[in-house]
Length: 166
Image 1 (cartoon, rainbow, N blue to C red):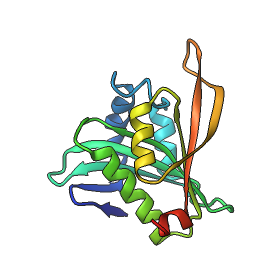
Image 2: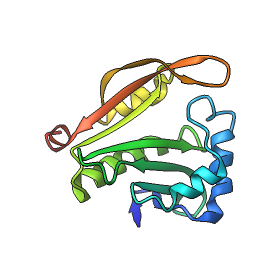
Image 3: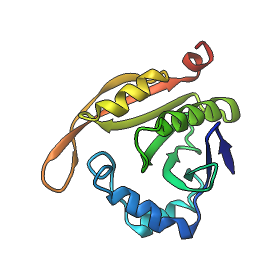
Image 4: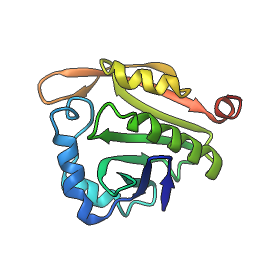
């Protein structure tokens, strides 16, 4: 499966992409903002019918990040953007990917709600999500243990009727 934007292609992640994915998570500019999975956890997600795992490439085929969606089988029609990580910062790739995922989900699936969570201190991501229609729902206080301390997460979502009316 592929999703294409003006500058990017989202394609299914292959097993030989997983070193890139794990290294992207561990990158100093990303690791404070996203959860850390093992190679094996990512590998397992590739065959999970409830998930989509995409590599994000520019039109020249250079990998610029990845994104994971879950909830494809959710009876409540709630699709979760489990994780997005971009290696090349400041190019607008994250916003472009998020807009394309929301568009794809509401135009090609039966999703009623798209949601995500993010670290409460990640103001850059929050601004991007709000700019494409995500709404703050609440804070999960001290819900993530980073190995040293607890951090709070923000939950945001966009509903089908909000997207269709924008």
